[in-house]
Image (cartoon, rainbow, N blue to C red; front, side, top):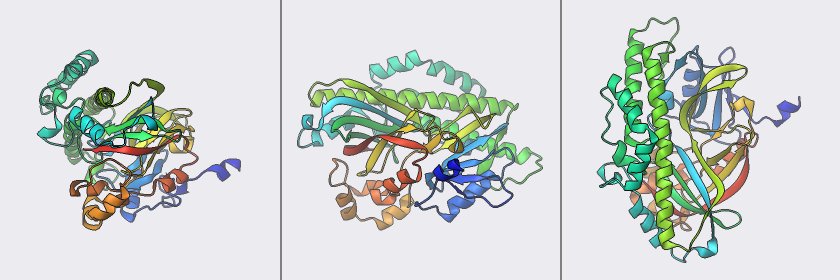
Amino acid sequence: MEHMDTTNYQWLHREGETPIKGWVRGVPLEDKAHAQLRNIASLPFVGPWVAVMPDVHLGIGATVGSVVPTQGAIIPAAVGVDIGCGMAAVRTTLGAGDLPDSLARLRSAIERAIPVGNGPGGEHRRTPDSVETALANSGLWQRLERIKTKHPKIRLDKVEKQLGTLGGGNHFIEVCLDEGESVWVMLHSGSRGTGNLIGSYFIQRAREELGKRVLGFHVPDQDLAFFMEGEPLFDDYVEAVGWAQDYARANREAMMQRVLHAMRAELPKFKLQAMAVNCHHNYVQKETHAGREVLVTRKGAVRAGRDELGIIPGSMGAKSFIVRGLGNDDSFHSCSHGAGRVMSRTAARNSITLKQHREATAHVECRKDQAVIDESPAAYKDIDAVMAAQSDLVEVVHTLRQVVCVKG
């Protein structure tokens, strides 16, 4: 009985269906997202159950904030197109007193060091030597060329141009202060255009395969098209998704080096402290849970095994958290990847005013223009409510507040 008292999840499935455990107490769960979760859980190779994080919201293909274990099959759209997207954070020896009164120069220095946004402006005009070296030493080129031999539609032209770049959407670079006034650097990005291309290509291939299959069960959404273990495309996708996840991690490492380099030019001398985290939140990997080996797809969720460190960012202007996993078996050792949207980007642009955005981010050196309205704090769930809903999944190690935020 003791276990029942300490668990935070609620049951979200209908009787007789694959169980869905949701950490959604005190946070909104939209009806469309709930329906999407039930669609995923209805597939016979999904299970033993699906875990739903408190930042849950409707996604393309699969629900953001879901942890989907599968046996003998893999769903490319559940991983999505931002493969390997995730977070990195490091703590420096700087304190709040080492920062200048105006942080505008520091933000400009970071924006000069890291190409941001989508399109050509978000790519290196000339690839930095450090990026070329990192790429040469990583083995990523050779691995991608092997994948391209089998799948010629996968392009190689963005790999070099985009390693060490931010991208757009909800990707960001932040300078933060923790509860002890230590300065941290935190960033959020993924596998950029090449990962997007890999994701889109294999999602389309899975849809084509679905059209040829004779199944003894109903697939309620084309986006839940899958590859079966034993099929060449299953192995090819696992190889390609592994590449994109490694590229995403290398991208964050390259970006972090360039941000720190920009900071060293603007701030007093500093060193890095032992606390450093680099974690994915859109990815798939083999794990053992409930005594079985399963493929765990975390779509907007972070691995939170016992004592593993993770990062749960709030929105622009809200708090973020460095957390330690509690290794909760019910959640497949997972936690949320952020606050989670309560408004679509369109709804946010239509309902949040520039004045509201400026007030909500008054304490942060960041963009205050119309183009970032869809990332304003009001577009997201309350991060405190999200953290309260998953108190049995993680414990907070550090609470960070942003002082500089660079958006894609």
